Image (cartoon, rainbow, N blue to C red):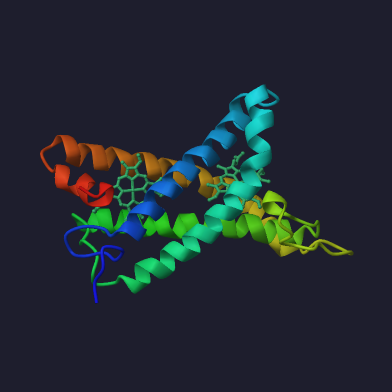
Length: 178
Ligand code: HEM
Ligand code: HEM
């Protein structure tokens, strides 16, 4: 059975569109927190945004898990990517969206300190030595992959706009819902 919630070969359904744009807004927030921390450390904006980085990142982790399950449930139904490169690009975005918060959360766990995103107890913390491989994995890859994702998002948005202005507005239309 197909409902407007589900994808169809002509357009993405409501759930895919809500997930896409909700996460797009959260990624803007997440990278705003990082860029402010990088370029304007200790500014008022940094003091406001940076303390939200771990909580918003954890929310993004939850949403990507839902998004992956939803994509799997809609396999074969969704619009085909415009090219093999677009398909590869979307797969890369999925892998990075999963790997980046995952290694950060492993580092957080391995550090042994309690963690309560949005004030909700999530990791109780533990006594004793840190779990080195988890801490190292996060420290080596979290930031690096984060910057790669930012570059991939810029490429993705540029490709979407390029299609729009070169006479293929229906490609943006199927994720906007027109
Ligand atoms: C998809 C979600 C996330 C994205 C896109 C993201 C992105 C980034 C980026 C680009 C940096 C800057 C790295 C640098 O300074 O070179 C960073 C730093 C950091 N992030 Fe995230 N992050 C996410 C989720 C999380 C989560 C869930 C946590 C912790 C629970 C976290 C904790 C940190 C910490 C502690 C730093 C500073 C240390 C470091 O550079 O690794 N992030 N993040
Ligand atoms: C202004 C920001 C954005 C615009 C204009 C935009 C545009 C689009 C368009 C036009 C499509 C449909 C492509 C097709 O049908 O082949 C799409 C799909 C997609 N976009 Fe974006 N996008 C934006 C932000 C993002 C962000 C921040 C991410 C993730 C980090 C993302 C990840 C994806 C993925 C994975 C798909 C494939 C459909 C899905 O599985 O949800 N997009 N986007």
